[in-house]
Image (cartoon, rainbow, N blue to C red; front, side, top):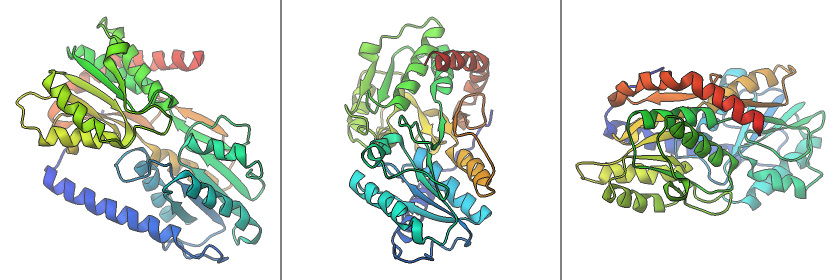
Length: 358
């Protein structure tokens, strides 16, 4: 298990802000070209006969999480593999639908022999149900970086969080944390509920009690809600006041507000928590570990096969056994590392059983 070193927060924060600016600028340059041009100038990437358009979810990028990893994976692979890349960070579902429509409308006059439409989240599945003309063919292929419940012959690449969350829950219980809360973005997201279920199952596997009715809270009600919400800041105040020992946050960008509270609060005793999707230990001294979802590596592996026109599986769901998801223990909590290894095999078996029953 890798133990990451956390530089000083002020330096990291500055670099983080610079990264966000460059990221936003890159997407602006990539998305704002002349859509009627047959040979678009896309962000300086090498021209070729392969073109990819990535449409991110409504939550967007900029929180150093799941979608930022996707963005990094595409930018890096486009540089190394030489395909043409266009990124689009839509402000709403309507805008996403418009750029997807553009993708298919431009295919007849496109200079690219191979075109790939990438959807950063399964939330766009409903749009495809409403537009049956949007479908893959010899020139155009579709990749969902999330589950896709429809019947189209598309690529799906996803990472299960059940196993790694199970391992995290078992470790939190093993570290004798008994006053525990779980925060979920909403009860309708399959990914959110898979992680929450895994954490609870792992926690209870040690014999520690857990009451979901009182210990699990959702920030939103609908599938796309709760990922960017100020309520996590105010909930953190109540958790400190109530002497909560650990909070497991599956709330997307909302966790940055919780981390901000932990940085700003001057209480002598504050709850511990974990980063989600990326190594986020630099955001708070109270982050004991981070669950890292390596979408950048997954994207890079997929694209390296796609640009070479190699056959690959249509659908894959990566698990704790793969190299795409794991835990990074924060430097100040290195004593936790052996506990993760203690429960790794148990978590892998539990995930296998969970997925078989789904």
